[in-house]
Amino acid sequence: MYDLNKSGENAVMTDTSPQLILVIDDDKDIVQTIKGNLELDGYQVVCAYGGREGLDLIQAQRPHLIILDLGLPDIDGIKCCQFIRREYDIPIIMLTARDSVADMVLGLECGADDYMVKPFNALELSARIRAVLKRMARSLVKNRYECGQLTIDYVARRVFVLNQEVPLTKTEYELLELFVSYPNEVLTREFIRGQIWRDSQLYGHSRTLDVHVQRLRKKIETDPKNPCHIVTVAGVGYKYIGEPAN
Image (cartoon, rainbow, N blue to C red; front, side):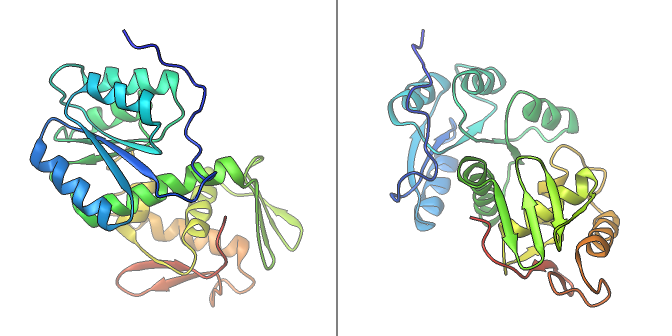
């Protein structure tokens, strides 16, 4: 039905024009709300109210990111996501009313990069879009991060402090990678949990995040009790003091 090919895949960081976001959702009110908020953030936005229309727009316009509803009237959102993922390396954020853990896991396993449940907070959606685009941009144009005594090899997923390799757990590495993507910005605990444990509600109200941060500090900070990189913002979350990762 669709003659899709990978030639001309989205080039996230190869031009300076506003990034293009495609919203695929049959709820016109939600679509217009998302469109208005994203345009205020400086994005270009195109909209589709069904899966087939969305697939046509992907082929024609090659968006940088797709916001995809699961409950589409013509094509099941999961099937639509699988089809997109087979043909394109375009990040996908699922936006849906289905809030069970099983649905979240299914959405992520079929190829989505993130998952948000309706009703949603516009600021959180904006933050998740920035996070996903930053991860995509880094994978395309940046293989290494260096700031002071800290070096991250993104390809090998290795971390060095003063040129000595520091072994990190999977969670510690993902935390560090997230922090350096947002230099000098305050990240709430809720946002960090949503990025690190996107497919689980296990850590939603625990102190597990703080324990992982403490362990990470011990490995990368000269004085973990008085950290100079990952600092606590009381009552809010954490802030990474450093330079941009791209």
